[in-house]
Length: 370
Image 1 (tube, rainbow, N blue to C red):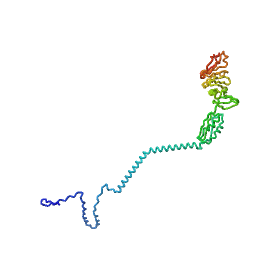
Image 2: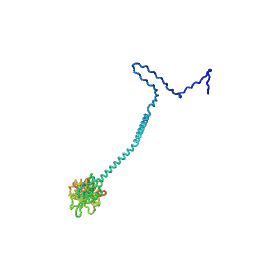
Image 3: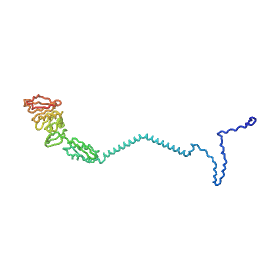
Image 4: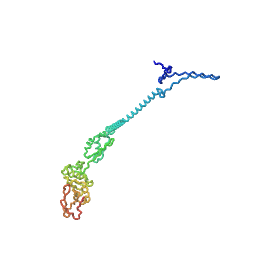
């Protein structure tokens, strides 16, 4: 224990240590005596005693003025707003990344719908009784009876147009030899039109008891007891219809114009290169040669007939159409000149065997140079 020191002969007490700011103790409030009320004056109302002075509690800091429940409400509202914003952003991202998938699904759905619709339409067209055959029409017939063809096709009535059997139609129409070809046309909802092309005869062949009209293929189109007018008589002798002679004659007759074909009385050929014609009325002959260049030969023959058709009998030689000539039958008696004879050479070009001299007058023999 320290003793007090003497300074100047006097005892000196140690000074009391100053209290630190942290160890300060708040002094209790000093109670002040109440002031006496002033004396009341006469006739005045006594004043109310003043309330004792109460010491106010210190104000809390600004940050802690708001009540705790209000702060909690604000914090929860902020959390909810952030959660909503996050959800919106997530939805936006999902939409952006799934847009292509949605478009792909939409395209697949649309394609599937179109496919289903097409299937339904096909099934309706094939099996619906609304598109069943109810009417049959035939046109283009001249020698054939159109009603007979319609009757032959009647078993197809009631069949849907899409299920019509072409082979059955071909079988029914194939029984008629006059039909060269035909074309079927469907007219919805329930009509079938058959366009027929009949065989056209190009000549007539004399048989044992009748005359047979034949087409270029050698098929008999019709039979008559008398020879029809305006149809050339095909002279086959012993040659068959499917031989080269008939093929050449048919090709020549097809190349002739209708007016010139009507002037042909007979046509004959034994081979491909010796086609010969005779004309009606005048008895004039035509040495045609082969069937090559038949169109040009027909044009040259028409010009020769226009020039010499009224000069009596004679021979037209058109086997070489560039040097076609007409030889009258009386040339041998005019000036002692022998008429030239022609033979078919290579390529159908005639080879003259004589060198004729023009008779006096110069108008009994003529030619057309192509």
